[in-house]
Image 1 (cartoon, one colour):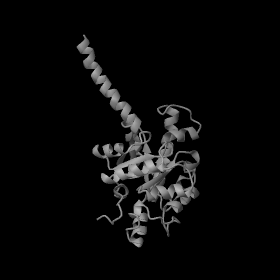
Image 2 (tube, rainbow, N blue to C red):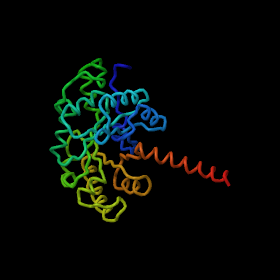
Image 3 (cartoon, helix red, strand yellow):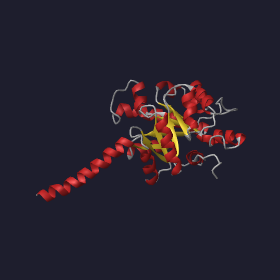
Image 4 (cartoon, rainbow, N blue to C red):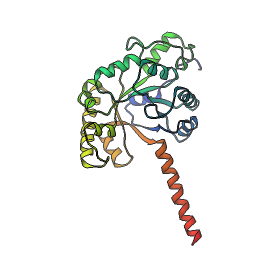
Length: 269
C-alpha cells in the first residue's frame, strides 16, 4: 500500500546473518545508474556524499529512482551538522554511514541525530520517508527507528582503539573498516598489497570483527574481489562494497576495447 513505510530489506538481511554485496556510486551521480544497478541484480546501493559533488537535490532524484526499482539506498554523509543527517533521511534514505568515527561518544551523537525518541532526538519534518505525513505518526516513528540502518566507519587508529565501546553503542548496526585511510592513520604510506600495510589492516579487521561478534553488529569493508575479499569474509565481514562506479566503467570499457582490438588487429593483418 502507498501509505506504508518502506521496509529496509538490507537491514533485515543483515539481521538474518546474511552476507551482502553493495555497489558504490561515487562520481557518476545520475539516477540512471541507480536503475542500471537494479537491473544488474543488486538490492542496495551505497551513495557517497563525502567525496562526491552530489548535492541534496541530486540525491533526491537518485532516491526517487531507487524507489521505482525497490532498491535500498544507504548514504555516506560528510561530517556535518544535524540538518545534514535529518534532511538525508527525510529524502528517503534507508540508512546512513558516518565517516571517520573515532570514539563511542561520536557514535552516540550520530545515533541521537538519526533516531527518534527514545533512541535519539531527531525531529519530525514530514518528508518523503513519512510519505509526506501520510503514515500514522506512531507507526512512522516506530518504523523509522526500526528500519533505519546506521553505520560508522572505522578508518582511524583512534577508532580502532575505541572499537569495543563503539560496537556497544545502541543504534549502531554496522562498523565499516576503511583500509586506505586506516593504514594512513597508522603512518603506513605503502600500497595496499604491501606486507606492512596488510599487517596493520588485517590486525584492525581482527579487532573490529571481535567487537562486532561480541555486540551483535555487522562488520563491513571495501576490498578488491578475489583473495582480499575472501580474507576479510573469513575474518567476519558480511557487508562487502564490491564495485565503484568509475572502476566499473574503466573495467567495462577496457575489456570492450581489448576484445575489439583483437578483432581489429586480426582484420588488419
